[in-house]
Length: 216
Image (cartoon, rainbow, N blue to C red; front, top):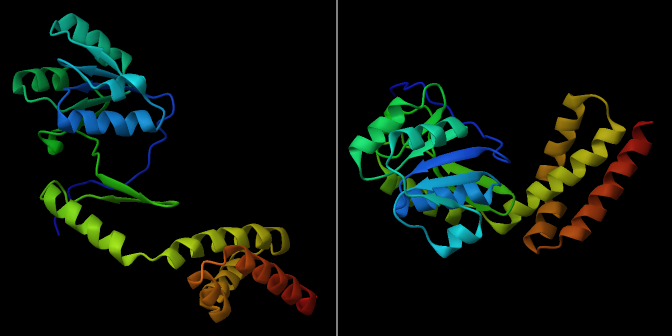
């Protein structure tokens, strides 16, 4: 495997300012994603949907270089996703050390916006090093089909148990061992398969309290 220097990170977007070059399908999709995570977005292009406007997106139709520079200077993140190579290259050239995502040539930027989806509390991102967006979508379907409802409920159970254990056990290693015990507990598995989350939580609470009394 070739190491391209990329690694996955999650970025807090609340209040971040995004300059997005382009208003086509790719640009609009990325605009929705940034807006849904509380970023401010200005799109540079011809027109945007009412849905984007209602989310707070601002359209700027400028092609003036000075105006484009002002928008780039305003931004924290620059996303380049238009079909105009000259425009794309110009905006990229004035972006300096800002975070830049290039939909046309990802390797020319320093930020990737991967295929992304949610399964309840889980956020999954897939990046193929730019080799196949199509396969990223196909892998997404396979992952979605593999993860079961009880897997998602197990996350809630683990979080519930961790919060109780933090109050009772100071040693992180001991807490981890106990969480594995809960993960492998057949009664909990059965309850989660039946989607009886509250009963599983009560079972865990009693189990932990019982074990804590025994160890004292």
